[in-house]
Length: 114
Image 1 (cartoon, rainbow, N blue to C red):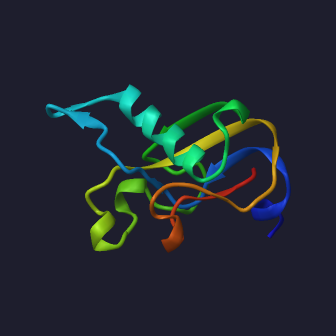
Image 2: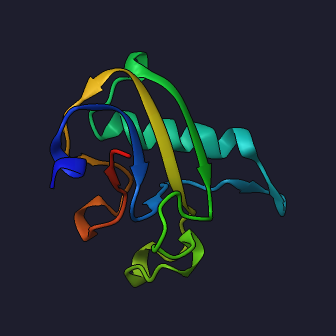
Image 3: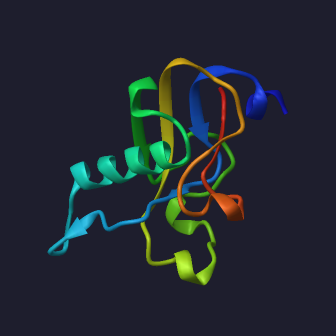
């Protein structure tokens, strides 16, 4: 449980974060839009933008074992939203659990420290 609860500056998603918004516009992927949605998910989950040093996102998991974000089964009403595995570094240590995104009440968007 230590990886999920103990304070850490770096956190990696174990289950993908589901974003509440579109990261495509006119059929094209918009990286800046995806980044904005990830920051929104983190701040709405209680992690102030001022404490976020950097972050990255990808479909592939950061951990060995979990599936690609696109292959993770989600509740029907969340299927239409983009989902990514996220790595976030905070300026100051954050105690867990770290959870973000609109799927956080379904066990999605759960992070652990490396």
